[in-house]
Amino acid sequence: MTVDDFCKWIESSGFKDGDRLPSVREVAASSGASTFTVFRAYRKLVSLGKIYGEKGNGYFWGPRSCIKVEVRERETDRLERLLLEDWKSGKIVADSPIPSIKDLCLAYGTTQGSMSRTLVLLREKGILERKGLGHYYFGNRKSALTESKEILLIMRCNPCGNFNGLSERELQFMHSVYAVAHRRNLKLKVLGYFERECAFLDSSGARIEVESLRDRFGAIVSTMLVFNVNTLFAKLSRTQFPVAVWWEHPLSAIPRALKREKRFAFFNLAFGEFPGRSVGRFLKERGVSNVAYVSPYHSSSWSIDRLRGLKKAGLQVYEATDATHASPFDFVHEPKARSHFRRILLSLVRDIPLVDAWVVANDNVGVELQSLFMSKKLKRPPYIVSFDNSMESYRNRLDSFEFCIETLAEQSVFHLISPGITLYKKDDFRELSGHVVEK
Image (cartoon, rainbow, N blue to C red):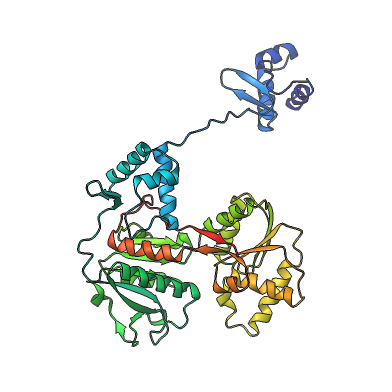
């Protein structure tokens, strides 16, 4: 008998899942075949998933049974994780002491003993400090915070040093940094970065050399629409103060040398899979299981990441994407940009099957789809949820994922005050959370 003959014979023998098969020697003795031939037949059935073997115990029919072992999370680990999540979302404010042990126990459903042990562990790690019997707070704060000190806010600008091209999100971030600096009694000096000439400009358009910035308290840097970030950070690396970076690029593109320096902290707002996972969880909680993802900007990593996040949340996703463009800014210089944009959208949604909801790449896609419906060029879409939570989403009552701009500002300033002190894990990219705003 050949190997294939043995396989057919064993498959037709009527074994049930879990039945132990005769040993290789027993089969060889009864059939007159060599033990090698029988062994090869068993191995082939193992590779096909028909049987499985246990060392020292023989072979068994059917798939291997998996015993799930539930690993219970230690209470202190759970509490540290929850503290981390609330730190990322801004529920624990960097500007003030953390809530009292009693309030934390109520919030996290635990005992005072478990919460006290967790805070003591964080204190031993150098993350928290405590004065007497007072509240815990984040440690290693710089001294003399009541004195007036100057921090820098660096954002892209035009050749005159003006910020008239900043997006709504960037302007909101600037406003938030001003508010946090005021609460901290810190002066704020805003510098423009004109990338074409790799120059820092003040409000009058005059150049500011990096050597003159050495004695500043720290700097907060936005990389939104800064394309050659290496040139910018080559200048900042010549300083000594801490730097908090709003990183608006793929996470893999962070300069490795700077990532290892404690004085640099990179905060992620819009990139990565978290926004997609969060929207996916939001939809699943409302009974949605099948969605279409509509993105005319799928050559960008942020669009790809959001799609991955939706899938990782457990949704079935129909992909209606176009990889010709990376962002709305790609359309700015195109002739008849809006008409071209609308044609792309119509081509993407034309063949979408029946689904529970559409998830669109950002608010301008959602608003444009609503406009196409109002002009009767598109059938009424199902429920739409978007990303950005811009003012347009409020005008059009479009449910949208809101990024934590205020938390980004708070934690950026906190890093300048206490560089290296954070609930983020070692070498963790500082990903800030957010939530869907229903309208």
